Amino acid sequence: MIKDVIIRNIISNNDNRGFFREIMKVTDTYTNVKFKQISHSKIHKSIKKGWHVHKKQYQWNYLLKGKIEVYLLDLRKKSKTYNEKNKFIVSEKKPLIYFFPPYVAHGYVTLEKDNHIIYGTSGVYSKLEEYKLPF
Image 1 (cartoon, helix red, strand yellow):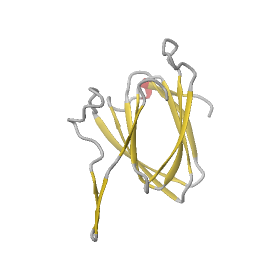
Image 2 (cartoon, rainbow, N blue to C red):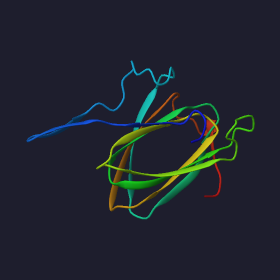
Image 3 (cartoon, rainbow, N blue to C red):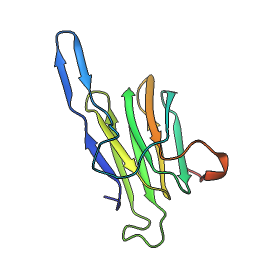
């Protein structure tokens, strides 16, 4: 696993009405980084997004609906895991949240018809704060 990347399973509390999930709380202790923006993205099937890199922002991603194959790449030259790649599947049936720091490139491929991702970032959106690489 890439250094400083965190993947946490999300517990579903199910009953005959549906389910309840706690995704992220400001009191979570797995990181001391606080989020400043929450965003929602809808992506259709067979879409490739990536590589996307933040210079300063940390990011948390939660798949609300669908199934995606996630790719992470450590671009931090001083990191013990420099140039290491991680790949994993996220689906609404096995919910998790994943967290990654600046200069860990991220991308994904959507595997179902409708995919919805909720993501939190440690900063507010700025084109100057990010860049893209060929995926």
